[in-house]
Length: 225
Length: 225
DNA sequence: TAGATTGTTAATCGATTAACAATC
DNA sequence: TAGATTGTTAATCGATTAACAATC
Image (cartoon, rainbow over all chains, first blue to last red; front, side, top):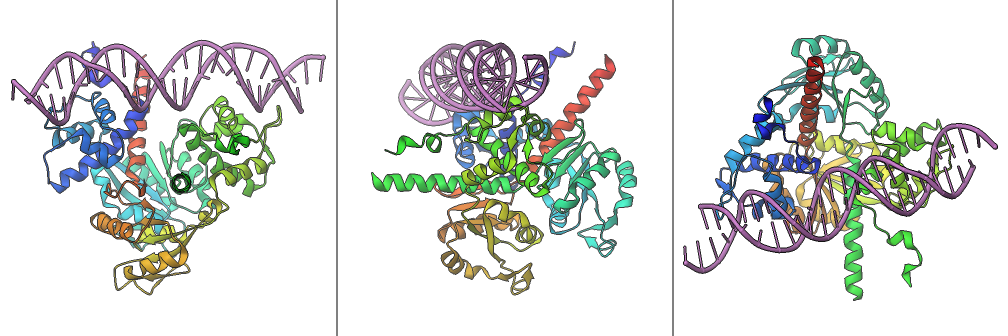
């Protein structure tokens, strides 16, 4: 029976899963810094602006246990999260669009921390083809299917302008891509079995605007009181 | 009494607020396309991969009403969301770091849709200073306070490498910045009254990895059945 | 009118917080 | 040992879903 390993089957609350990603990022950073071996739920909470209770509750879904008055072993906790997120198993990804954004992505060093590797970058612009972005040569779109097959690519980042995003998505779907990492603001229309992760940055700025408005309202009210 | 305008005081559930941003993006797109004047909750739901009931429930917090069998007036709905998000009131923002990422951000055209404008971009690299990014000249870090004062800047995007992110954050805080839009993966340590919006892209990729693993498990299971 | 779609209330489900025992 | 911190259970709070009346 497979039910022996309970923890593997246990599903995390969605909200917990989202925070686990943040813990992962934080722990990765702490591991690199090497300043401390243990961390308290209180410290984690302060950095991520949540409550220590929340942190402990989230960790209760994991195997790793903390020690009262000592905290959680950073390396141990990170190892479990790495395992959980499959950051050891490497994923090959491609980038379509070699503008500033695509180039930024191609040069990004942090992918190795989460078990991902950019294997190719494509552009439709003849001028750009053949030029280098970091260690990658910009390839023409027609090479996409070959690269997908060769490197078993399941994920593609779309870094093209708004206007061509849907077109590129259609192309990628036709080539059998399983997940689209969408950096355009365009809402893509693709089959339901294709995963879409929207990285629309304007959302973040809208949050900021909202929080700024909130905090100004608060300041105004307290000045009136 | 201020309680006359109920709707203005009414607070949205946080989850609803998150989705309102998506509706805003979608409606902005539809408005530009000019293909249709009305849209059904069903159509919105399909594009955003949520349920129509959820869409209607969210819209019930707004003033705009839909018509049975006709749907919601796109322009009207967008106008209300624009009002809500304050996308008409313009916000001046600055970018620190003129690498690929900072440049991509500086060139991004979508800011006008959400009432934001990049007024300056900075870099510490002498080589880059004076060069142009789109219509902006790259300025030295020492000009930051002047620009902040001159343009009443409250929000700064950090697009520098991991290693200098904290340093830049400290600088910006000292100069009175109210909100930091953090594009580095570094978890920043800043005073609690400074808003931090983390735009760490690795989170999105972790979600993709997870969803890919899920869907493969599902496929495997159904092939076993 | 009949049927489709909206809008709202109630029921269910899920996430967070509070409380506190266990433990170092 | 005393006190601080973890881990878990129960209580509260919030979000989603279901059901259905209202409406075009």
